[in-house]
Length: 243
Image (cartoon, rainbow, N blue to C red; front, side, top):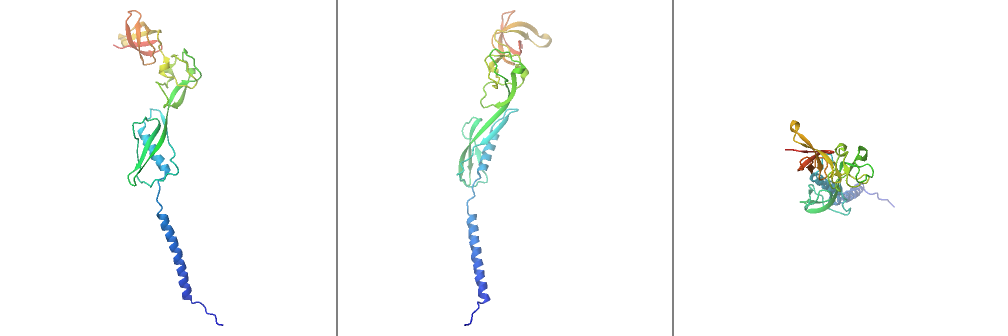
């Protein structure tokens, strides 16, 4: 029996056919991958929202701000946008939690994201629990960075401004020292009342009729004339009137 060998030409054709089928499958797979829609990176949404808040919030001199957007739902699927826009809808308070509207014109979509802000400022606080009526000393005060978001009232950063002032109410350790709880000149205190300026100034003794800290305007009765005037607190036991 005679064996018939396949022709080389036929083998070559079969091999070419197999290779062609393989590259066709690869091309189809690549084309399918290329048609997968590009999605918006969630981290980019956070970055845009944080940048919008940073631009809108006014930070006090010497203050610090921390801005942190919440994480979008991991299941969120937004088509990729090359130019994401952001706005702050409504009349929002620019502290604590801020809602940011993120939107795209083409493709059209919009999404809302919550951004938390914390503004901290340096301030004088009680170095220990301080009782009402205490006349403040340097050792009673410490400086800390604390959140401005919950502050109420005027704060201080310079110890010399309030050293010698009297506490109206007790203060817990670490709590801010605020102007409404102090009197550098207290009601009933005897004060030196200065009127005028320079060589034309005169002094008299008076009685404070209201409380005040540095720079406050209080009512004072001149003990010599009995006249009641409005005077500015200059220091402990000292007030002035400008004419």
